[in-house]
Image (cartoon, rainbow, N blue to C red):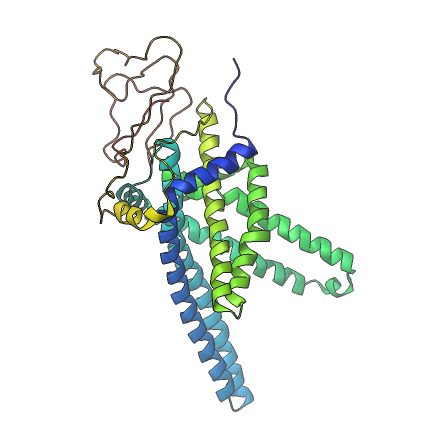
Length: 381
């Protein structure tokens, strides 16, 4: 009997769009809020740079110019740090929503509910935001370090163009490698209950098992998503700029969703089984988008004529239907009793990850400090 298998490239691509088909109104709404918040932050930055420019124009002497330069450097350093911290805090809810929505769609085979998504992010917000801030500080600090190193190398001016190109490529490789190592830290915080330091250590372990997939995702983002968003922001045509920016945002949604799928795939193999994508809910049609968003935030009711969500069928197993194990002291209806030999226990989002092959003992109950499991969470597969 063959062991667990990882998803193929085709399965990752198809699975990404299947998940997006069930989560896109929710994710798009959260992304729109994020864009508005970043827009407001950009406006503050613009006003700050305008004030700096006015300070330059009002300087009448060399001494005044020196004082202005000192002030500008201080403002830029402090402003740069504040911008990174604020961006990290803004990344936490947006990317966290994508991660939780993707995980719920994969593991529970249904559309996410806003309350459970917001609840998990709220409980893990501080370590999640801290992880994002550290990631942005590392990525933002490395160019400064590289620039200072080059400034203190007199031989740089004597280097050939080929050598400079190689140095540039080496710099890109270092940056991408560091980002890949940190890639799964937010997922480890949300779904494995890791602290900040432990999340980065766990991320490095996970990333080693998905290097090629993560490199492919970064290439798609670097050559498709990011350029579309940058060109969209600079395009003179407002309509064209919005369309290009929206296209780049769509690539970002695909990137993060596929990243969540890769994470779930790795976790499934670690737990001794292959990830199988089954969905109990159909994709969301465009005509239902606003109604779905209202339902997700609890502000509306299902549209008339909408088909009820069918419960996910139990996995098929050869022989008779599986029965709940009758362990001593365990209730026959206990969700923590192994339902069939070889079933793998699936911890709920936010619970610690158990060792491979672990099964709850008789009378086992989750720690009250852990977040509650979703109502229809399947603990076995």
